[in-house]
Amino acid sequence: MTADRNRSPEDIERILAQAHRARPTVSVGEDWAHEVMRTIRQDAAESPSLSKVAWAEPIVWRVAAGAFFVAVLFAGSVVVYTSQHSNPVTALWLEELDAGSPFPEE
Image (cartoon, rainbow, N blue to C red):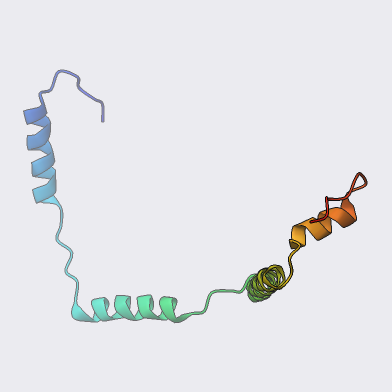
C-alpha cells in the first residue's frame, strides 16, 4: 500500500471507519474468560525467584537498627555525663587529642 499525500483527512477517516466495520467479530465465551482469569491468578500466585543476595537485606536492616540504638545510648550517656560533671565531655576529649596547650582550668 502506498501513501497518497493528496488525500484529505476526511477520506482517510472514512476508509478507516469502513475497515473497522468490515473486521470480523470475535466471539469470546465464558469458558475462555474463566481460563484467562485462572492463568492470571496462577501467575500471580507463583513466588518470584529469590535473588542471591536476598538474605543480606534483613541483616542490613538489623545492623542499621543496632547502630541506631548504640548511637542513642552514646548520646544519652554524653548528656548524663555532662550534667554530672563541670567539664564538658568534648573538652576532655580535645585535651587528650590536642598536641598543643591544654584548655585553661576553671
